[in-house]
Image 1 (cartoon, rainbow, N blue to C red):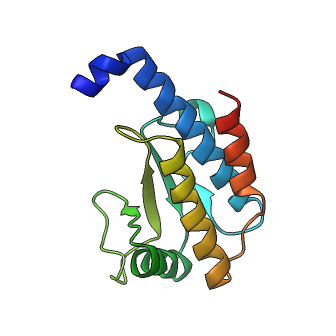
Image 2: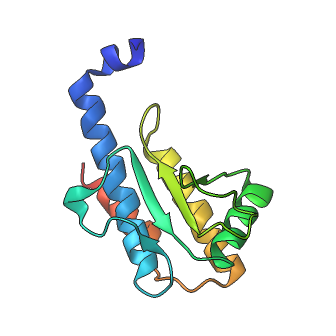
Length: 139
């Protein structure tokens, strides 16, 4: 609460919105040439707190496992859903971008996902990191 008070709640909300737009820019780019999809296609209906995505198994499972094993990065699974190693898991996961989060944390998250997509040969659009960086630069 001290951090929120020091930053000012309106500034916190603006930062969350700015970081969300950077993540959306990357996710939209990846989805242009691959199976990754945002759960909420309309940006006006998206949350500034979390971005929900879908990458059907086995690609979603492989990406989550690679990120956790190689980078220590854990993607949140959809709430109320089966565990990612379960046959019932449908490939939904979340990227959180609220709280004590900043631009370099977001770029680290996105860079990790980009590396995983490339390493695993999962089809995806290119230029995602550049698009996210452009959003962050336009503050």
